[in-house]
Every structure is written in structure tokens, then in C-alpha cells.
Length: 190
Image (cartoon, rainbow, N blue to C red):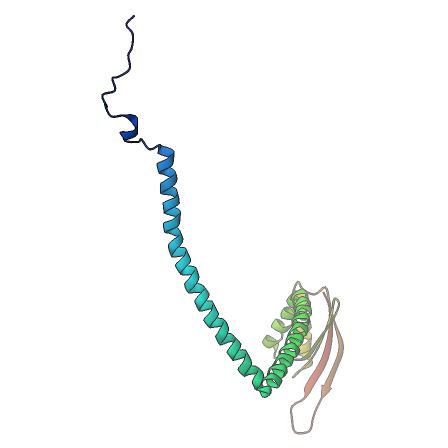
């Protein structure tokens, strides 16, 4: 087997005069440190500019606060406005609670009331009052004749909204000089 030999070193200079070879890690480290230092310059400039602007804005804010404190009329007005805002917020909360209650009541009974009102215009019935207590609906109104009241009661019975329809009161009133008016009260059950 032939013997492998090292390449011949033809550099005749002594080792102290030879070029040094720089390790790759040293080059990478140098470039990394240089990059960080160069990147730090814009960050430092931005930080200085921002801190200067912050100081200017803080001085303007301090000056504005000093001017506001020097005017006592504005403090009283500010307190009055804050008190009005608190009162309005309290009222708003109360109204929202009441609106929720009313909406809950309306949605539960809307079909029966809609059916009662829908049957009235075709018969020239004028409903003057609608009262609802649980599942009972009381309709008070007036019209020109007793026959129209009976037709209205039949129209309510035909709808699927009511299980029982009763005429509670039926009376004719004849004011002098005007046509007679028939007043009625109809009690329905849903």
C-alpha cells in the first residue's frame, strides 16, 4: 500500500510572518455584534424622539390642568354635568328594566289582542278599552247596533285564539240629537 502523504508546505516564511486564518465562528460573532450595534442606532434615535415628544405633551397637559384648576366655575359645571349623567344613567337603567317587562308581557299575549282588534274594523266596532288578566281578555267598545255586537262576538268565536266568548254587558244609549250608541263588554278566554 502506498503511503499517503501530506501536501507539501511551500510557504517558506516562518510562522510568525504567515497570514492568520480567521475561524468562521469569529467572523459570525463579529458580524452579529456589528449588526446589533448598527440596529441599536435607529432604536436609540426613535426612543429619544419619543421621549422628547412625551415630555412636551406632559408639559402641555400640566399647563392645561393648571388652567382648569384656576377656573373654579368650570369645576362646578363639571360636577353638575357628572351628576346629570348619573341621574340619566339611573333613569335609563330603570326604563330598560321596565321595557323588558313590558316586552315580555306583550309578546306573550299579542296574538289574542291582534285577533280581537282585527275583527273590529270590518263590523264598524270601536274598541274603547282592552284589559287582559292572565288568560282572560275583556273588550269594551261601542257600535251603532246590537246586531253588530253579536256579529263581532261570532267573529271572535271563529278565530282560533279564543275558547270562550261571552257578552257581559249590552246597553243602548240615545243621546238627544244624535244616533243611538250601543255600548258593550265582551269577556273572552284564551
